[in-house]
Image 1 (cartoon, helix red, strand yellow):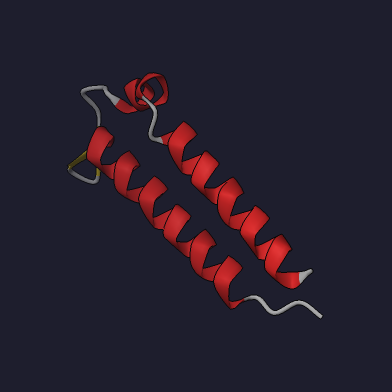
Image 2 (cartoon, rainbow, N blue to C red):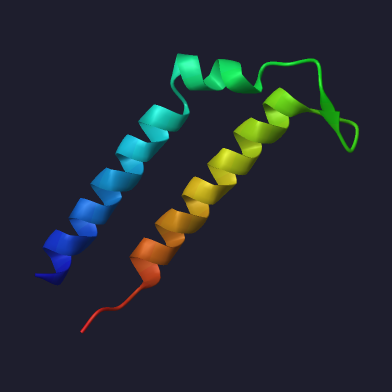
Length: 65
């Protein structure tokens, strides 16, 4: 049961990554705005990427049962 639940969560994270890095959503970040001197587009990419890595680490390290 544990292996099945972990697999489902990993597949959900993969789907979230595909959706978040898809072209129409990426264009929401493509503006001439800077946050703390960093352009919004690369900042948004790295924040989403880091959030996906953190969620992946949480899923892999969480023990149920």
